[in-house]
Length: 431
Image (cartoon, rainbow, N blue to C red):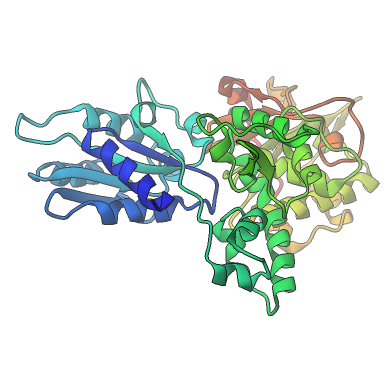
């Protein structure tokens, strides 16, 4: 039986039983396609479907509730399909997870069906979506989309012997399968370039447990045993199952060097002496948050040669995060022993470092007033849309300029970032 058809049938069985579904996976894993396949399988005579995307979901709670009321008023089984649920909840409607939990638990009279939801998320979204009390993701059944193996025609485009060789190269990921090129060799090269480009984003979409498992798989001398009921399926395309004798083992995506993966993972030492890798590590913590806030007093006291490294680092970060990203930086207006730092000092440093107008347009820098009783000792990366905070090494370590020992970037409680968030609001504008 076709694995994709079988997967869709299992999803429909869950919906018939009254269970909501959380389709989870990395970018390009087929989440949106999976939602479409599920919707097509639901007979119009029995099911009433409402489909939301980040562009179509109502912004106002009243309008949103009204659409749900209309959906639930039908005599058919109501199903809400949401793509991309993580983005909608984290950036637009933070109360939505609790609201949908209540609606799925509510029976609208003995002759009405309860709401079912099918939502697409990244693995890390379960940590990012914070509800007051229980939320929809607490009761939704997780389903990882079946990997598309591809056809012989697809394999021929990349000069692969068969679909299994193509799967080892691309992991069935749509972002890798869609690369262009005039020859098979060129397409395979473009697959490797695309995988390298997507790698920080993929890792950033994994929670700490999945990153720990990925580190275990990549760091082994011998292949790890595939664990289909645990974390492993979510790691596609980075990790795939490989048949070996009578068992399944983990296979790392052929188009990615394992040594490119390890330096980007949580709990690994921060990369030293390599601004490019340091920028990729920074972006791997950002994940899907395109507006991170970097807090570090040391950024106000860089010397002239060091500004060049910072500018190079910021150029790499903005390139990796993409054209829709913007970086916020907060530093102090004073450096020891007794020197005040002005917005002009920061602007001059960036100018001496060779910052371009393109990077400058994607940067917001503010300095807070130490004289007002605020002194932010913690160095933090604050991801406001992801409800996440990471403790960073000192700025010179972050940009790969100095070695701070076995320093890393552990996650810390969100409450730790409250003073920095408030200081950002009151700080003076540099850029």
